[in-house]
Length: 133
Image (cartoon, rainbow, N blue to C red; front, side, top):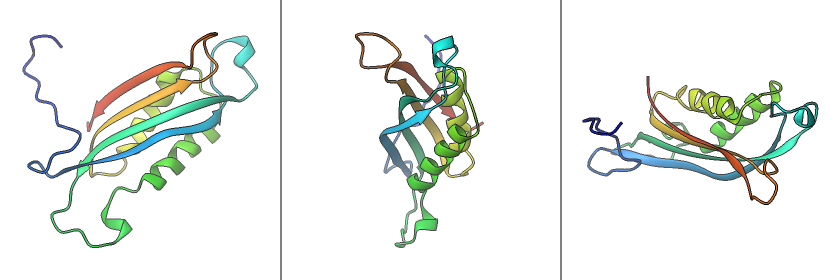
């Protein structure tokens, strides 16, 4: 919002103990779209996830002490396996909600791109940013 005094958390900050966890260019097939030609068939989607998460001051070399990007990827695949989604916006929101299941996630930025949505364009899609409710 223009002119608001909203303070935004950075995606990574040593001073604020925030780590950046990300997934880049995850390409999956999805049942997605509202148009007739998109119904009943899979199409390629590219997903990017950026998370601002609590950083541990003392980090032991143990997976359970960090936000696991592989676990986030499995959640994305489960969302897609649950059935047809009409909108890229809906998929992005569902991914954001899934990311917040880990209480260490403070903010999420999710980009969903349909790779065959627009003739002559590499992709079309949406990017959202959400803060922990």
